[in-house]
Length: 480
Image (cartoon, rainbow, N blue to C red; front, side):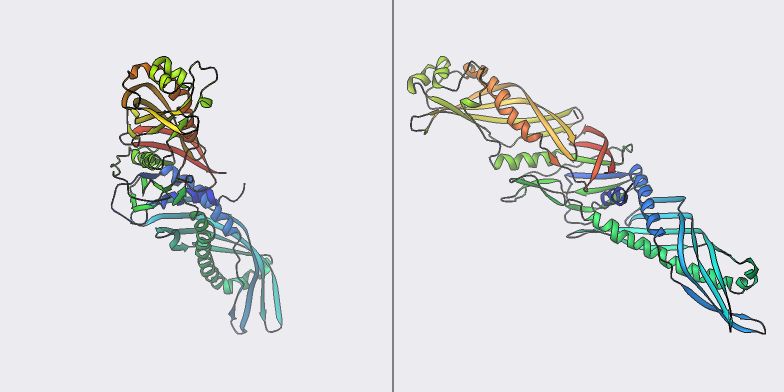
């Protein structure tokens, strides 16, 4: 607190996060910034190359044929067919940020082993057998471009491959002189075929594996029946030699009636931390929009009745108990139950700084006497202010919180029973709020707020630090 399977999602997770911020919807500060570091890109590269290797191993190599000429004997024909890939090695790879473009994946010094059958014919003479060949010095360069209009998409914007050499070995060594007649044609045909198939495979891997996972990136998320979170993208990614930063709106809004909040997100100065794969800078704007929405919706209202008071408490919510402190309550409403309506009189305001989290919370408590006909008679209205301590943590893929309060300071805002000293109620309020009201609030905060992450990932080595106007959440990711 600030207190063996398909590896596609493992690398796709990082690529999806790298795609954050590729569409321009407004020129404003973000509520949340998602950062991918080189550690994250390296993880994505390893997992992505493993996926690409499996795809390459399943490539289908088409048969090819041609003709050759023997001096004084004329032309003959050859066929290479039933070709199967026996092994793929991708020993050296790199993924890097490309300013204003996206990501570039490069593979060098790769090789592919293929086996198959061959036959050659000249008139009535037919020969053939098996062959093995090795394609050496394969290099692949592919560009991944992210775009986000109404939906997030990722495409293979460019692809090229190059093959240094093709070495053929046939099963009948006595026919080596014959193979020499059309070796160059075989090599050139295979190079052309393999270059085309390799880039088709890369493109297919993006469209069939990465793109569907890219669609799991949350944009609008429903929290509950009251509020949702807008994770839409505000601006193109900011790319440096070390990181890629995506800017998210990061705003909680009312599901019943959405309107812009009366305050703006602050500018965020994110430190150059690179230890974790992914960082999320979550501004206090995000938390304050949540406080605004829930306060306006009345969710922060709580009715406290006697049956919610711990049984071991000597003080009960009755006019008799109140009468000990405020005699006129018992005289005006003898032997009746009472209840308190506790609510936030204004939206709670969270300030994040390097020193920690400070929550300004203004409450009010309206006391009622419950009449024999079950109607309510107002007694008095108290204003309450307090210093609130906030702890924030991560559970699964959700941001959770917990509040604790110090002494409450009371003010009599209105009285229907005449004047009295609010100091008489200090002990009661200091008991009711921490023991009854606060647990209800913390129960909701422990349900948490979803983070803007793709599906099915595990968060490892979490780090949570307060900075000026934002919480910095660093984490390593793993699909599982």
